[in-house]
Image (cartoon, rainbow, N blue to C red; front, side):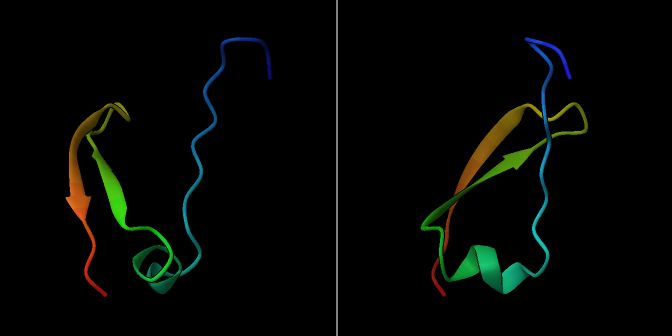
Length: 41
């Protein structure tokens, strides 16, 4: 990696996101945030 490179990480299981994160960013195919979703789990 070089300075300015972007690292995209995923989650291993959806519950990891649903019960830990209150808000989740939704991204498009180019990894731009297009919406933020409130999570109620």
